[in-house]
Image (cartoon, rainbow, N blue to C red; front, side, top):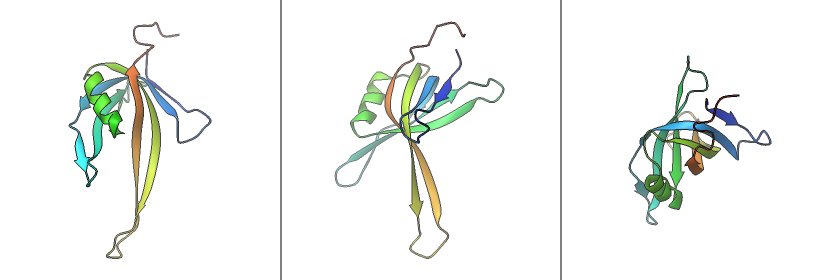
Length: 118
């Protein structure tokens, strides 16, 4: 079965990447005095085999530790995601930039793995 993105309520939150393959899982990085944890990992969305997409996701806090512990490279997973954006205005007066993050808040073994495509 091919991967697909399922928007719910056409909102930037609570979207899903279904039946994607984990290509790589980075190391957990800690930031700031509270040791805020961030884990970046890459999944393959092969919905269209002619144009497969490698998508960078991140898990934060306790979710980063769980992602690292329970998921492995090569595994097919379903990911619940939120898309977040930030505006950055440099102190030196340079051009304003915007950055996006795809945050995975739930990742589990794909339910559709091994099922025939309809």
